[in-house]
Image (tube, rainbow over all chains, first blue to last red; front, side, top):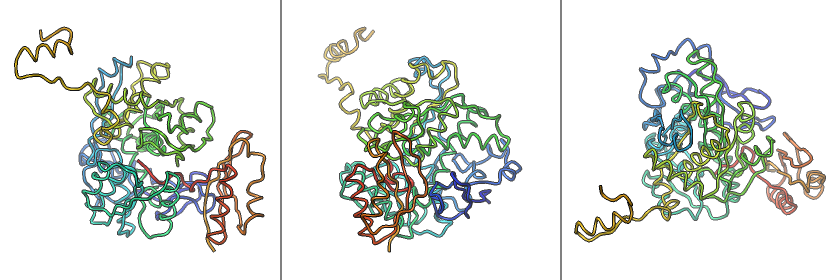
Length: 414
Length: 80
């Protein structure tokens, strides 16, 4: 049984039943799922959650669908790692990494699509759809396959072949759309309004976005039932950024943690930084941008939750990093070389922003800080391909190895 | 008749221009503002347009030619 009660407009508070809709009919504001928190409080305990499955479904009482209907390919409950080496490099004494690269399709999108596909099936939809350049397409294709639903996935016509493979293996109907970023966006918005399909990030978006709360739940549980002092997370649509905090607040409403006072800081690539730019200008009114960055998984020029992200930064004394493409590559390498995690470009944005904010003194060295690494590096391997040391090449003799090794490692083999 | 929900974002140089009023005069399109936030530097307006589908598209092209950014309501649909 779900404790979800209604959809409520975030602007005018008008309420709607738990149907497929993403904006209010009256003010066009976004709608969000509300819950019977008193019911949740009575139903859950730290112990009941600990006995649940090692997936996001251990937080079933906080989700807008019934676990009996779960489309479960094992999303969530990913490791929280104490990052001593990276922390030392950045001057942060209490740094943790939430490693969401290990999800079933190797990105945090499995969290949101697990919830969206489950709710879509509950609402009677047979087709699951999305428009994506990568991670979301992979996850929708995989979840639809597991749910026995048909997947229809729209991709830009110039998307690289290796990115198409990660979706096409699951057997969706893949549609390449000719046109620039804006044209693809406009078509997909129109498609979402034209067919009786579940577009995961459009008409079932209120349910989809709830999946990101589980990042907040997991971090708090993995820290021994406490909220972090500071979170640093990437901002694309802004949904993940906003929902991490909602997750922490809901755990408090359910009596499971003390009131969170977590500072929330965002991370954007300078080539697509509507939120970071607005934050630097001290306004909550962002200007949409046409993206131009290697961090394509964050390339949303008109973020649905951009305003709410900015409000959240204001409310929590947070900040927003803005990093260049070379800094993103350096961030990917720094994370890999210090903590053994190979992240995609979004992870590079997060780590480079973490570095930037630490250097600016916006993160206190002793704050318990969690950085969110949201996708695997193999999906964007081309970003770092030219930036890595080539392997040593030797003849099959000891002398040949030592000669080459001593050039690479000055202190030699000793 | 078609109905389309869009978000207009105005750059600073258009803040003083009555773009929405002109759009309603130039085209057979009924405009209905539902949300807005405008200051002296920038602004956005969420509005509903009602009319023949081709006329709505022509009116949106006209607005874009004048420097207005036109986006779907609810943010970008294409995600990473």
